[in-house]
Length: 340
Ligand code: FA5
Image (cartoon, rainbow, N blue to C red; front, side, top):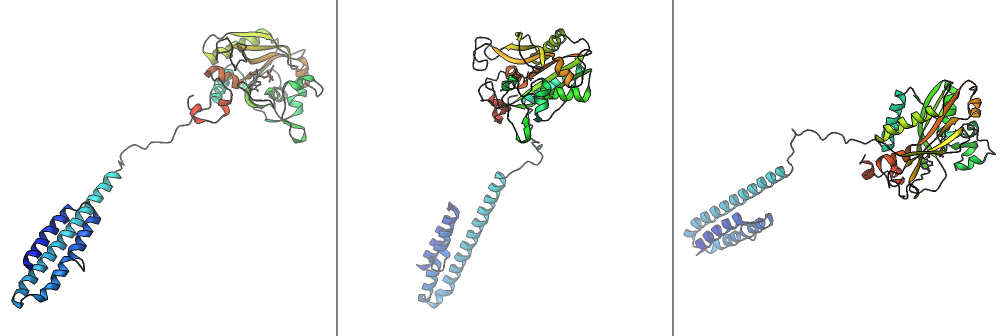
């Protein structure tokens, strides 16, 4: 019976519209039942074969089934679209009342931290902080420090020479000379800064590193003054007793000259690559200013005396933070730098 087929199609399709698991499956049900060549269309074509008195009744039934299925189909589509929208809103949920994360905090490089601490200390002791050029002339880097061109001491610091007789300063000592020239005696100055040497790099040697120069020129300055300031400096940096040794050191611009070494804080004494197995790290060369140097900068050595030191700031950072390879400090690796 054609009426039974219509009813059976209607109830079966309604169930399938409800249970369709995906939009694709739902569309397949629609095409099968309502499509141009779908089951309802086929049944419609059979209508002509019906007795005229049955046609109106069956036609009504057929239209009713078509409308019900179309309505169910649209309802299911609306229901699916609503669920998809809710899922999207849930996934994209944003709490506008949460506080903003704020800018990422940066870090001061360990050498900058130590440099600033030392600047504060020396300023509190009456010293002025001076700056000088990294591209220097031969006069300030060497001649005015009692190292003329023929002097073998020029070989102690392998130099990067530039065009026109200029050079990359090999130490911060030229700033002493500039300080004496500019400010005259009495003088208390420090000069932190970057220096350059054409030497091969290893665990304790860089081609580019930091020093902090210090100088005091006054009446009756002695080795006792020098030692007082060196001890004050080391206590401020290490916040504890460190073992040091003083030995004679040769620098043409000081007389007498000393090397102040610190017992290696990486290995504690037995020897390691940082201290080249010696147990000691060269940190702080110093001495009383050579009268020639005072004279060349226009200061009368009969009236004034002075001390000077040239602290290896990069090595000091290594000792303070127990860094076992100098190359980490300039490597630019944030994982390393963020530890300080
Ligand atoms: C000088 O540069 C002198 N101008 C220091 C000075 C100043 C002496 C005033 C007397 C009076 P020296 O070449 O030793 O001296 O270097 C000083 C310090 O810099 C060393 O003790 C060491 O701590 C550091 N240093 C030297 N070479 C390197 C290097 N290649 N890498 C890292 N640190 C270095």
